[in-house]
Image (cartoon, rainbow, N blue to C red; front, top):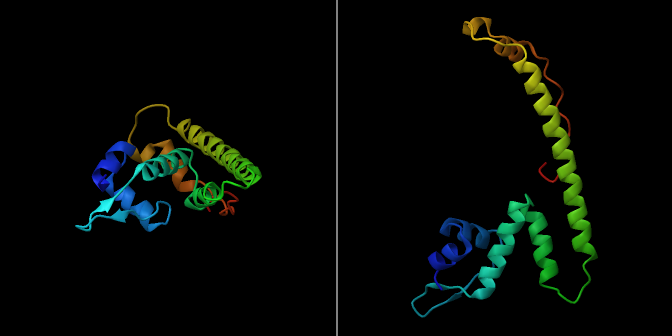
Length: 143
């Protein structure tokens, strides 16, 4: 199948297919006599796998690691379990960060309970006067 057909079957764009090829997540396809890319069912399966991993917010590094394990099927899945456990820990950290962010936003929202002139808006005043916290080093896979 051609790249457009692959993209349609995998429900993504042609640009996404090309990007995953460039990143080394999707292997380069064979070429036809007229130099068109020719994709097979293995490309469909791999692209779906990649898209499912991305839907779980996995990084390209994590996906590469999982694909390396898939490409060596004789090994055990301990490394898969470890990667998923680490990803769960990253998600837990991100949830805590988002909960803190939500609380900050709620506190800001409490500063302005009615419509008034913009220069009297408690939210805008709060954003102006809010102390900027030192940037915390993130220990997640997102950096």
